[in-house]
Image (cartoon, rainbow, N blue to C red; front, side, top):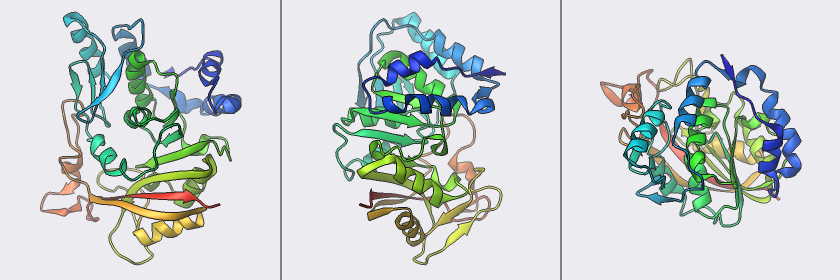
Length: 328
């Protein structure tokens, strides 16, 4: 089993000139302290896949094209075949879409649809320091940079997601976008370093959701904005749905609140000026199996006789996006 390693000197150099430089030692210690969590049986395979991608001597331009993070790699026909084989070895791709030249990665999630829902409502990211908690493979990190953010940090404990991010970073080579293999609870307390903090698809995986929200609050500066996306249940009462074992085939889902209960959690965690900007039932066109994610997806997680329910009998996934400000 291989272990992920980070060079402290390289790590510190990446942080020079960024708001995170003062935290470099503590962040490096946080990564190193994860110990066994940095090991993975497929790590060597993933690193070989990234290393086999055709090299680029200089940064490649990227843009957003029809929702995809499109990287202009300049592949010839041989490089195209080599790159596609390498990228396929990094499956499953959960978030996207991406395109490496004409190699289109049709990920499980149409993450661009979620971005389209939230982007018109959030404060401008121009010149802002952004944290994306549970960033997956970094799709949204590139959307945030394209939206004008000056520094973007993504954190996610998944080593697999980090290697997919590394594949894109191999070409984009951005010094202002970083990924650290950390969970929110691994970050130093009271960083107060970010203007906008995103937490999307994370809260329902936390045993103590209010603690997670408090940690998000502590990471923000005094005028910061929170962008929170999570599963909720319908209803106006101040209650939660307790989950036993699995929800929509997902492990580690503990409870789903009503919007009223979620709002109470946010206020108790130091947030104010709450706004609900989206409430959408997840569709099987937004989350589905593809060539790049060949295992089961949402369709297989719904009751085949009643699509308003999951296979476990719970209400079908309903996702809310809320905005909140750190209380002054």
